Image (cartoon, rainbow, N blue to C red; front, side, top):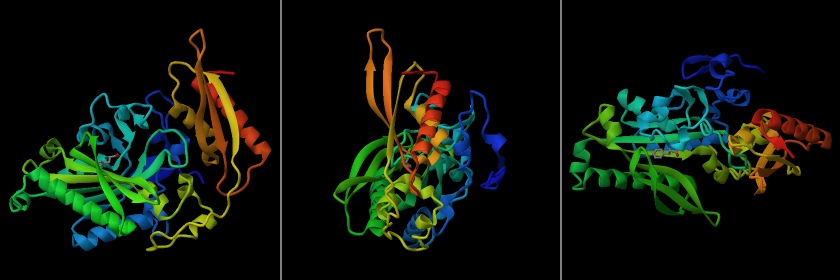
Amino acid sequence: PVVSVLELGGVKITKEDVVRNDPTNNVPDTIFSKLGMKLHRRDNHPLGILKNAIYEYFDANYSNKFNKLDDLCPIVSVKANFDDVLVPEDHVSRSYNDTYYVDPQTVLRCHTSAHQAELLRRGYTHFLVTGDVYRRDSIDSTHYPVFHQMEGFRVFAPDEWEASGMDATSFAAADLKTCLEGLARHLFGAVEMRWIDTYFPFTNPSFELEIYFQEKWLEVLGCGVTEQEILKRNGKPNNVAWAFGLGLERLAMVLFDIPDIRLFWSTDERFTSQFSKGKLGVKFKAFSKYPPCYKDVSFWINESFTENNLCEVVRGVAGDLVEEVQLIDNFTNKKGMTSHCYRIAYRSMERSLTDDEINDLQWKVREQVEKKLNVTMR
Ligand code: PHE
């Protein structure tokens, strides 16, 4: 069904508001069709089940003090998405190659951190923000241009750390780690965990939490003590705060044994019927393992070529029938021309594809790659 008017966080949005054929806009139809799906608000969907399990942890441990927001509009200003959280002017995430721009001042949020400053200004001190986020990226079983995040944020008043004898930053960092270790145990049971130092523009110090699960270290979330500048600019100059952001798909894939990120979008009853409200960690039973079909495409690239652009073209043609796009050969000849060969894996989660169907897709991919990316086919 073609939806012409969407309701996003109380805002009415039409396709013409989001998708335009001009160089300041890079939102394709395939992405527009994901806006307003709100998978995280479905109680019987793995993402909704996980969201609710995290809510449960916070409600139980903080006597319902955290405000929960899961319907904020995913179309945000560049200011909210980047400037307000101190993302440097030259940071790659601001590029048209990494982010979907509606116009030069407006993006599809690439993280739920886009709402931190606004919510602080509105007076919130404890909040959880869940939503769909959008990133241009390559294609494989764990990457999809739309996924879901939950942001957590807690503000402390001076008396809270003064009583502890610690400095404000150490106090917030310690509280953050205790909170998130408890959350990880709530979701995964008794697991081994470790903290890795990292960098985010909006927190300092910044950490990643990893858990040892199914014989691997798995990155669970990013977090840290909020940069003082963010609090100062948004009416909380005498406070400290912590923040975290976690990717719901990444955790749900592990907790529910979901092998491919495209499945979250499946409307196949053999997928949807396996999950129900409140049942965290029910193991998904694969209803099919249809074989993948591999097709290669080779071309001479030009200066503006990027893998993200290629993946967008392939998805524009094949949609969720494309499972992976992988660079398998790369060389530069004596004249300085560079050739790339990509292997495209086609596979449906729901049925077997016919040879005719795949050949047809591959021809359309070749045609569109040549036309839209201005490369020379080999
Ligand atoms: N916004 C970060 C990301 O998308 C996650 C994060 C949120 C990190 C809050 C620190 C604090 O990767």
